[in-house]
Amino acid sequence: MSKRRLCIFGEVLFDHFPDGKRVLGGAPFNVAWHLQAFGQWPHFISRVGNDAEGDEIRAAMRDWGMDESGLQTDSERPTGKVMVRFQNAEPCYHIVENCAYDAIDSAAIEESIAALAGGYLYHGSLALRSEPSRNALRQLQAAGPNLVFIDVNLRSPWWQLERVQEMLRSASWVKLNRDELDVLGRDSSGGVLEPSAFMHEYDLRGLLVTLGASGAALHTRDGGPVEVSPQGETDVIDTVGAGDAFASVMILGLVSQWPAQLTLRRAQDFASKIVGRRGATVSDPAFYQPFIEEWKLAYLSPRN
Image (cartoon, rainbow, N blue to C red; front, side, top):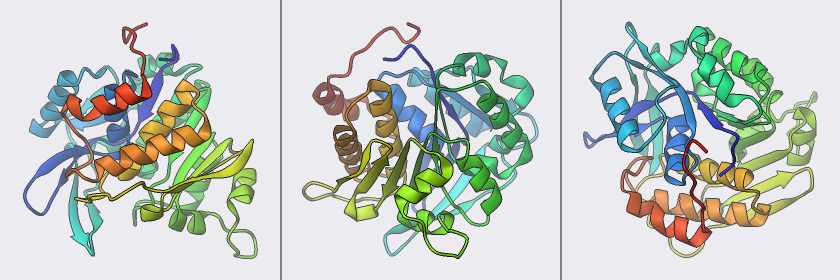
């Protein structure tokens, strides 16, 4: 494991499914959860309500061995919530507004800033819908992370083009899907930028374009694209969190300095297993064990 910390910033919430089941979620939380299972001990920065669901999140993090020091508590706003429904087997989301993660306090992240200096920062776009959380992120970026990995999630109406473009200009690596690339990658004449031109526009080191059932393509400064597609039959229960699973292994590959093709293959294989489960997180360590053994992940004391 790298001695530089992985800082994960953004929303944590409960996904509520039509069958009444609740599953811990939020893209940054999902990424942090998987990275914890893979021995990386990430520093997760978010905010929960002073309520029963906030208590559940803290308990889940403790049980999973996660670092709670970056998790704030809001006395006024509730813990985040998303109502999930399915249309043609694809998830649709109603994201409840004015939740605790919308008010991540920039005055309460001194420890997070110290953890981040020279390290790695992951964040998405949803938590940036509010000014307080945007200000907190700006402070983290000013700490000088060595690498910034941004996962684009364009959830209407919770994004604005100018803000997402500003966010992209601070990135080292970006993950998005083909539709998001078409929306964000427009030139002055309204045409769609090719991935290489998109990378040049935002001065990126790497661009990961997910292609749904067709796999993914990875573009880097050193070459590309490197492409991968699912292997064999995939038993799909739901696709909630598949992209977060993909992102977590991409980050693991960057930290571990795996070759691009190997990283992409492992990310696809892990995401293909996640879609066979309900929800985005898995609380059974045995689920991760085959990957840990196959990838020969080395474990150190989390504070080393």
